[in-house]
Length: 137
Image 1 (cartoon, rainbow, N blue to C red):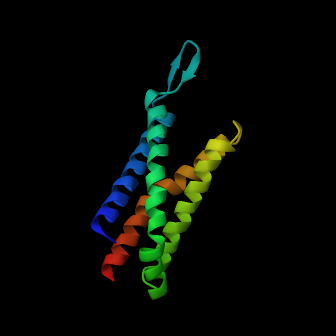
Image 2: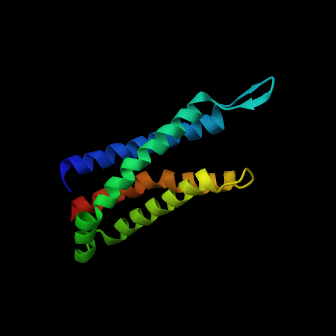
């Protein structure tokens, strides 16, 4: 991969991780109770907007890796398991994020949310392992 491509992916993954962590923190720990009940923290809204905006270029850059990085590694059987794990996690996060936005009812939103943010929290570790294994080869 070219340096600009790799660095762009790292920045986007970091931004998605940080914005997701800010949302989790604001959603679970920074809520306030006022005279009309519980209210959301302002960081919850803007972190979700940033999170949603960052996924667009990430999907584009991951898709652009299909014909070079992924194809070459798959045919050469380099870093095969961690690469497929990364791809499956990214697909699941995309599906669950879409589901949260368009399909989750108020009753099922907490379930969809957990099914999205747990793999999202695991993804940086999977990416780290994938990078380390790839550099070892």
